[in-house]
Amino acid sequence: MLGIAKTARFNFNMTISRVLIVGGQVYLRRSYVTGTKLVEATQDNNTGISIISMAKTPVNSLNTELLSALKTSLLEAQNNHSKGVILTSSLPTIFSAGLDITEMYNTDKKRLTDFWNMLQDTWLTLYSLNIPVASAINGSSPAGGCLLAISTEYRVFVKGKHSMGLNETQLGIVAPKWFRDPYISLLGYRQAELALLRGSLFKPEEALQIKLVDELARDKADAIEKCKNYILSYNNISSIGRTVTKLEMRNDLIQWMKENKETDLNRFIEYILLPKVQQGLKLYIEYLKRKQ
Image (cartoon, rainbow, N blue to C red):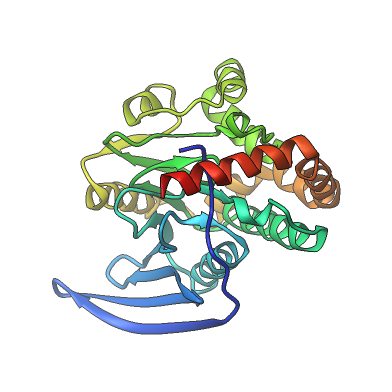
């Protein structure tokens, strides 16, 4: 899987809330919906932790609507003073297949602008979230899916045949600075350089070895439990001290994005509209159609 996904588009929105009681524990579940269910946000009232699950079938392809729903759910968790956030997927074998190819192929500048701006804003929200945030990676997580995971503070990868990594070069796409820098901070410069140039994808054991993830898990439930343990490890740490330290450590890239959003957008549009890049996207769409 190359990490660029194809999906349909819908244009209506709603939010659904309901209370669940599971094993004596009370959860408040909100589903952010655009045409079909996109994100489920469940809060565990016993721990105060929010579990945000991407739920866009078939592969959690990151289009404008899913990104918007994800941003909304992250901000709500922060504004409601959740103890922390666990980002995961409701799909059984896929965390996220990456950016939605239909947002980038054979389109106009306005649609590209709306898509990239939403990706920038959602990433900035995730990367600078005030509360602890961990990812329970329960399946394939290439390209944009990997970006989401490495933008959290802690990553737990479920064992299996799936893989993760920034593999944009396999499709002729360039991972921008705000994709690369978190990758470099985890892998180290030389390992990240080789991985980015080759578009490498890493199986769970490899991802742990190169420090792309922090722990491995037997299954999704185990991954979520490990993420909860990470978040709860801050129970005796000053929340304001923790938050300021996090934002100070991430400040260079946060400020770079705020100051360079327009330049980054223009670079993306100029590059993605190159005839050779569009031809590569076309070939990949045809490849996807043959697989169906």
